[in-house]
Amino acid sequence: MASVKEKRILLIEDNPDDETLTKRALEKNGIANQLVVARDGVEALDYLFGTGSCAGRDTSIQPQLVLLDLKLPKIDGLEVLKRLRADERTEALPVVVLSASDEAKDVIASYELGANSYMRKPVDFEHFIDAVGQLGHYWLVLNIAPPSPKER
Image (spheres, rainbow, N blue to C red):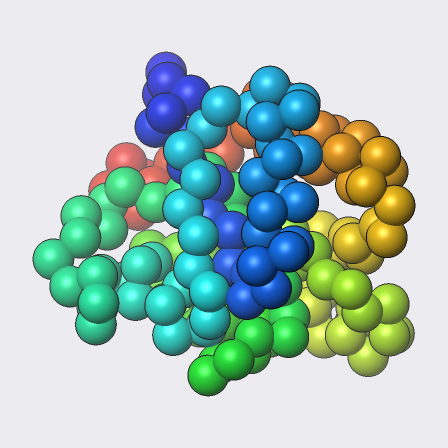
């Protein structure tokens, strides 16, 4: 069984305030998993696929959970999601879209591209702490992740 530190969370978020809030919410909920932050779509894909700035990274070690913002610079969140689902190394990664958008087109597109869940970022910090705690508990403790492509 993987340890807490091995169960990484990849936060793909360009807004420094939202990044800080997410980190604080994870800490307040006792979620001690390693948090990797990508601040744009290119950085996220480089991390996941071991390319560009992350060339040589061991891609057999993937996050247990991806928290994905939609409005990202360079490559937007929907395109990141599309590329994740198109590659066997990442096609089964749990992806929770964590976005300020509640537009129906964003929700529909996220699910059509294979998001596991869509959560609108609560404006109120206390609600955000609760929501992140529930997310963490479900995806990192209760959910049984699929085996990696090497283990299949």
